[in-house]
Image 1 (tube, rainbow, N blue to C red):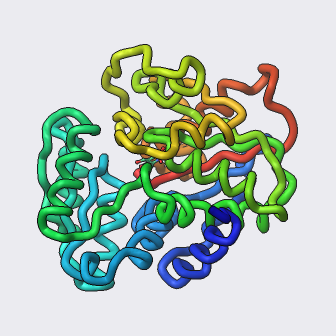
Image 2 (image 1 turned 120 degrees about the vertical axis):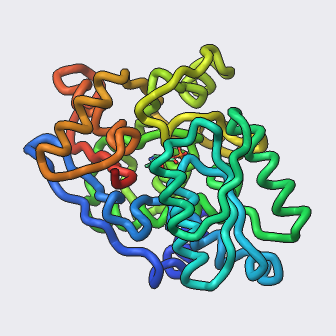
Length: 300
Ligand SMILES: Cc1ncc(COP(=O)(O)O)c(C=O)c1O
């Protein structure tokens, strides 16, 4: 697959539905890419619109289905409104009540589907197939990842000389997409891409370092990063080949970073601050030098 071609095509395709988000200095040490200011409140809209616009017409006009901890669902709701298409979002039992209300208010039919993200994903896919609807996967679908790759064309245009970029990791789709785009686009620089996962929910970290999951997940305030990668996710192998490292941040580090950003007037949800948390924790440490960027991935 020609990723460079697909990412450029996706970027053109989604352009009228997304915005070019600012990438600006914060303090003197770091630049932040403000995907919290993206349409629908997170980077997910980039992948979701590309998936929608490339899906089979007959299915996508019937309804859109996804499994989500909130932000993919919100992105689909925006698309549902634009194109007058019903949206079904499968969520976990412990989904934040505010996010559930939000999804319903935005027009989604919400299906509460047990406690396992993996099992909920399987249910959502079966539901979509049974009713011949369009399923949107944020971790197992190149159309989604190529949409996310549009971030890198912007990053490169805004600051071509980045040395390091911190990217929050949940299922790993975003980090895999960003890493793939930097590797594929000849004009883009080659910063070290560092994935950042919450220590309480660390399957991608463990897969990256040990080839398998080693720890039971426990609750994290970074709930948008919780959960396992989808069963047939393409990102596990991709992440290994394109990321320089995957690191963990603790709950206090995530909390501190979220508050730190708030003190600059930037209100993001805790998971969206994970990359910034790693940056704060790494200051003075070794390994991270030069011009550093952080993806702030979603609003509070
Ligand atoms: C705000 C936010 N940041 C980061 C992520 C992680 O993205 P991924 O699951 O592609 O790793 C998510 C996932 O839902 C998210 O909502």
